[in-house]
Image 1 (cartoon, rainbow, N blue to C red):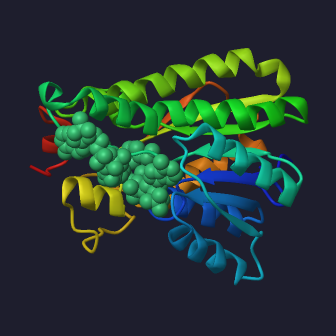
Image 2 (cartoon, rainbow, N blue to C red):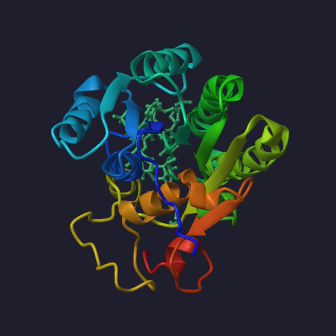
Amino acid sequence: MHESDYGVAEKTAIVTGASQGIGRAIAETLAASGANVAICSRSMDRIGPVAEGINDDEDTGEALAVECNVREREQVQQLIDETVETFGDIDILVTNAGGEFVAPFEDISANGWETILDLNLTSTVHCAQLAGEVMREGDGGVIITLSSVNGQHAAPGESHYGAAKAAIIRLTETLAVEWADDGVRINCVAPGLIQTPGVAETLGIDSESMPPREKTDRRIGHPEEIADVVQFLSSPAASFMTGETVTVKGVPRAGNSMSQGLGLE
Ligand SMILES: CCCCCCC/C=C/C(=O)SCCNC(=O)CCNC(=O)[C@H](O)C(C)(C)COP(=O)(O)OP(=O)(O)OC[C@H]1O[C@@H](n2cnc3c(N)ncnc32)[C@H](O)[C@@H]1OP(=O)(O)O
Ligand SMILES: NC(=O)C1=CN([C@@H]2O[C@H](COP(=O)(O)OP(=O)(O)OC[C@H]3O[C@@H](n4cnc5c(N)ncnc54)[C@H](OP(=O)(O)O)[C@@H]3O)[C@@H](O)[C@H]2O)C=CC1
């Protein structure tokens, strides 16, 4: 009889942007399954308590908090070095940190464009290149990138973010081919609208009004529903998956724009 293996116990995972939202849910989910997690955000005051919460629980893997702005390559290198020094290796990398502002294309300054491309796309390049080096010189590993439904379909106000997230999908496909012989699997998760503090800030959605998980239609997703997919992709159960983008979006309503479709306008 075949027994599915969704395990990540004793693996070492890096999760970027884990002080809140999707990244935090991913870190806590992997740790609850026994992985040691190196987690980062731009502020130790914000990432430290998340690590403490994980370390307070005896039944989880260990957590290492690192202050790291993923837009800065040298800081990403320090994150990689501290992770290897503490846990010995890197088995899983989740490039979760990202963000956006919503604005018409004509209102986005050169710096605004660069900010969103740096934060989402170039940060993913830094993390994948530097952690990928460790994986490829060792026993391989698993990388999971974060795109968005905005990287798959056009939505007004999302030209910069959509371009960055679309590029992440193609980057994922390319690295899957280039690094296949090095034992590195790389897949991408493209969430639909997920209830996080970032979304509350960007789109003004009340984070207290969470609908239950039983329904898949006409609701916003929970961060844990992304974390569960990341856990699967990280595990041996996904051993024949690489270069794929997994969309996680429930059943939004049909509409002219995605936000109208979700009933948010
Ligand atoms: C609708 C349903 C579809 C489903 C998909 C859901 C889409 C969700 C996507 C998410 O990723 S949500 C969660 C992510 N979290 C956030 O986005 C956090 C909120 N945003 C921010 O914290 C910030 O805006 C930022 C994106 C992190 C950028 O902050 P930063 O401090 O790095 O940059 P600034 O110095 O503030 O600005 C740089 C540059 O950008 C211009 N700019 C900033 N905001 C706007 C804006 N609203 N409109 C136009 N331009 C903006 C700013 O003016 C600067 O440019 P210059 O003035 O210097 O030229
Ligand atoms: N929520 C959604 O609906 C969707 C989200 N996504 C993607 O999922 C990912 C997570 O989104 P979400 O949880 O909503 O985001 P949040 O804004 O809620 O959280 C973002 C996290 O990233 C960290 N972060 C932001 N900038 C940096 C940086 N430069 N360096 C390091 N860490 C950083 C923040 O920590 P701190 O502020 O402490 O530095 C925070 O922990 C993003 O890539 C987003 O684009 C995709 C589709 C939909």
